[in-house]
Image 1 (cartoon, protein in one colour):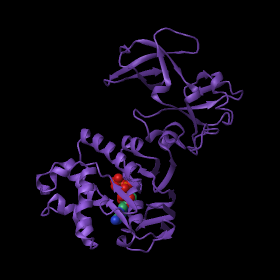
Image 2 (cartoon, helix red, strand yellow):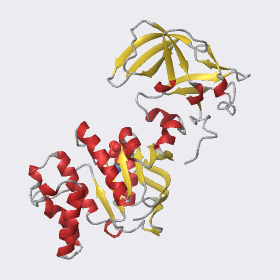
Image 3 (cartoon, protein in one colour):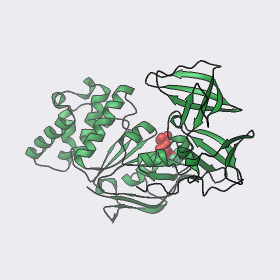
Image 4 (spheres, protein in one colour):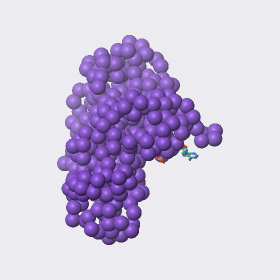
Length: 369
Ligand code: ATP
């Protein structure tokens, strides 16, 4: 297996800059995800690593070797795409054997590797079938099998599950993660699905506008977002955002509309480096707000605006002055539209962002990964 390094990568299409000076080190054996909205440059970065696009600037290293100008076939990588690249006229077994035959592998070795790969992907019973008689999930397993059978240094996967239905995606997600762990294979995986990214990745590079906004562990990306984009992109329902400022004495957050929230004792340390009297954005995840029907000290009066029961949890939208907060509560929590409740924002888990630079100002002292 191998490490992959991208240095100062720039790729333009006419005037459009698709990848804007990307730097990234993927250590050997890492499951690295590129996550971001459509058009953010994920696929183009992956295609440069694969050798399918020539960068305008920058270099690609595989295992320390500069492969920037090497053709894809010389890089010892395997790609799995959204469209299953399997031959319809060959059986599953022949499809799996094909990449090995192409490099003149001895027949005995081919037989062993095909069996082993089929076993890993639970498709042994399908070896004699033609792709036309396979389900979408089975076809995707064969496509993954074709990639792993050759034991390449690096796997590159571009939205490999997006043609599958939701249930199958969840199953295959777990299987790919398990397979990657078993093989110890350096893998770069492109997706716009944050659940896929959070559940599979060792590290997630969140991309936007051709730039990596943050490259970190799933836990850090969720709990310590580097900026407003990352904070808003990860998490469902999304983080609540409210424009605000910190009073000069640091004792109150003044929300837009003039509502003052006392700074809680537990949050004083967290807010200590935040500049006062500057435009800020308060960010609070729906699970970091408590709702009660009684009125303990430190709780603010709110009114229920909407209730969305989702089975395992319920999302309650509450209005607080001109602001609406989404709050995640347990499935047994009872609330009616118009009901008066009380909420407490857990400020020790909340974030403050600079409204101009969008950078998070409350990440100092976080655990480095
Ligand atoms: P998606 O999830 O929709 O595939 P992405 O994040 O993978 O999006 P890219 O496919 O890398 O994004 O595209 C980045 C930008 O480069 C987009 O603005 C896209 O329109 C542009 N682009 C990509 N490929 C080409 C091309 N061959 N010619 C012209 N523009 C391109």
